[in-house]
Each structure stands twice: as C-alpha cells, then as structure tokens.
Length: 215
Image (cartoon, rainbow, N blue to C red; front, side, top):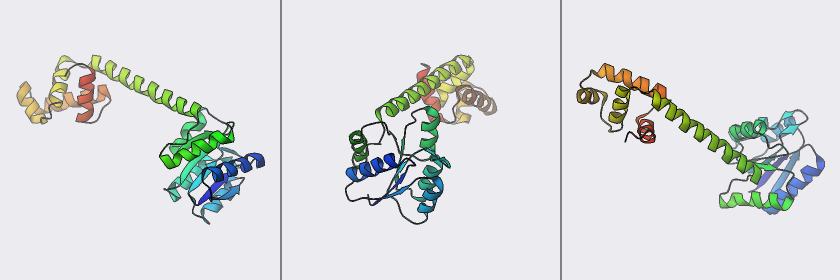
C-alpha cells in the first residue's frame, strides 16, 4: 500500500478514516477530498492503492467514484465507508466495483482490524453487512431452487426422459436414436426444458436433473 484516497465531506470523519488507513497500513500516504469533483480530478493526478469512499456527498453519490476507480485502477482496493447499511446503498456500490463495505459507526479499532484483513485476503466487511450479504444470497439460492423445482413439475414425461439423456452427454441426434424420435423433436424438447428450468447449458441440466431426483 502506497497511497490512499479518502473521500469524505465531514472533517471529523475524514480525520478518523485517515488515521484508520495509516494505522492499518503504516507509511501509507493519504489524500483527502470532500466532494466528487475533487475526487475525480485526483484520479487523473495520482495512482491509488486504497480508497475509502463515503456515499452521501454534497455533489452526488460516491458510487460514481467507486466505478471510476475500479475502471482506472483495477488493482486498487476500493472500500465504501458509510453510515448506510441498506440494500439500496450496499448492492449498487458492490456492483460498481467496491471490494469492501464498512460502517463508520464502528470503533476505529474495529475499522483498522477489518482493513488490516486485506493483507490476509479477507474482504473488509462490517459484521452486519456480511450478514446482510449472506442473507441475500441465501434467499436468492432458495428462490432459485424453488423455481427449479416448480419448473421440474411442469416438465412433461417426455421432457423428463430427454433431460435424463442430456445428463449422459450424448448428442441430440443420438438422443433421438435412443428415444426413437427425430432430432428436431429432441431439439424442441431441449428448448422447452431449458425455458422451464431457466437454464442454458448441459451442466445446469445435469444439476437440475439431480435436484429433481431423476439421476
């Protein structure tokens, strides 16, 4: 770590985040700015290794800088430092390229510990944010599984047969031979299977066949 950008409009928080960065990474230089325009200008003047970015700023949302930094400095560790822990702030920031998300209402010592984890390969996430992410992906996985099971019940007996054959890795023509139907009919069945199960590859077909208890 050589140079850090701290984007924060509150003077007290700016000082706190600067001290946190320097404690976590002794010797690192820190550039502090208080608005988007100044931050974007800095990106044209310096090469940054770390960024601590607030989201709510006088001239816009810090996600703009997150996205610009992720594009310009792909090796920079970009961490959001904010008071917002809701989905409407968290997920857009992560999609823009943030690699960490810290809540500023934690003790500075805790923030230092979370930042220091970068050197050990741990993403800097506040505990409540980590829980929110886990819950989000758990719900998404449950929804995907439920959707697959619902799609499976919509498969016709013939489509189920074709699905089983797909898992064996044989060609559409060979499936037609085995099932004594034309390759065009097999193709139609495959299209329907993919649509109903919301999949797009044989690997996914094999996984769904297993989930449905067909193999």
